[in-house]
Image 1 (cartoon, rainbow, N blue to C red):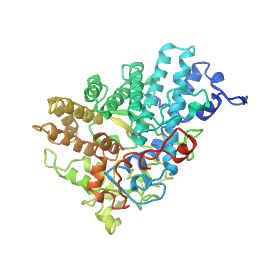
Image 2 (cartoon, rainbow, N blue to C red; image 1 turned 45 degrees about the vertical axis):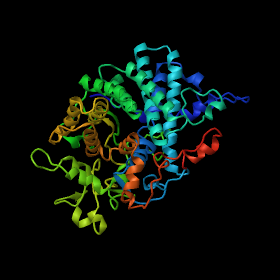
Image 3 (cartoon, rainbow, N blue to C red; image 1 turned 90 degrees about the vertical axis):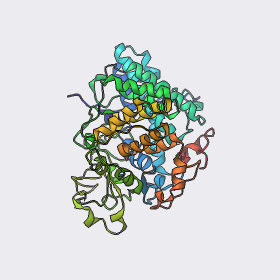
Image 4 (tube, rainbow, N blue to C red; image 1 turned 180 degrees about the vertical axis):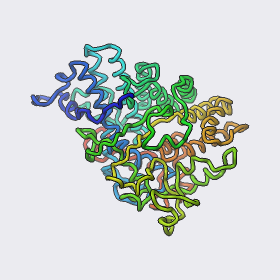
Length: 510
């Protein structure tokens, strides 16, 4: 069995190295603290430095909780968050630049960037196995590209740092443009694609590391985000033609604790159940169990206010049936509502959900209903579901989208869309023009990918985020939040960063 990459053992080197690499008139060296000059000496250091780049991914600020639940899922038109100060503010449309949860994810992504910059700058000079050196650089470029992909999608015009800082001026970078950031992201994924094992296996045989397939899929997704649909289709087709990936026979196998790293998964965050860590980022934190369940589970079954699912999502699922006249099986795997026999954790839904909550729709995907609620057994950080960042089903749907934009209504676009539908026994879609197929693909992305954190990125890519919320104020009926065009498409850059950097401007509208 392949070993999981042990990213929770990483050094917390970013702040240390950034500070020590700045040149000032007063140079005080701490003999107990490594500097870039003393650290980057051998292959072991190269591996340790790379591990430190991976380290933020499973932490509470990122995919362990804050990013996945309240800054990806809660913000979309699928979710209808209830008010909760600091926690649900982003989704409730009441977030301010001072919000601490927003700054936590911002800081961790830039920690990844700073660490990746050191690996990319220092490792080429180390004498070590050249093949492994190439892989390390490929992994570092992938991780920097991944970090900036989320940065540009979450904050838009944040600073772009691609070099290890050598002076204080390098720490006060201005806003980048979305275009420049995407160019850097694409460049990183191209390097990663070229340097990672071409047989589709993870470096060192350790699942959780970057792979050729993940780099290629993210390259395609980045092209799609800037509407270079032709190049996007080419990259997605490479993944499809590689035959490294396929859809799981059972749709729900993607979301359980027991089944991980299947042929459908291109990149997922690994959790093995270590609950001994603490709140915070990757600096010495060995936290290895995810905590997003509390932010996704129906309220009254967690310590958080959480959210309900907007009615249009259920309606979309129920609008059509399988080829044998059954309900789309993804519906009950994704959402929960008052249907005959519905259970909520270990309780009968109709008996426990009273008043308005009985008629609301709730999230089901990723939740561990073998437990009594989101907090038991053990503590709120007890679940070990891996978070799937990129699934093969998403590759097929993005390929269908790109192919349709380039060659409207082509058979290749229909085939990719219908491969996803066939897995759950839904009838093939045929005979649509480009516009009709475009809408069918967008609808399918909801049914296949809802509650997986991609929806707000989709809305922004399609340029319809503001339209969706303005035309449907009921999407925020739980919080009475109002979506402001030109503001809520992105999060505010954290106030502390804007105030401490004279060259950094706040995002428009904030």
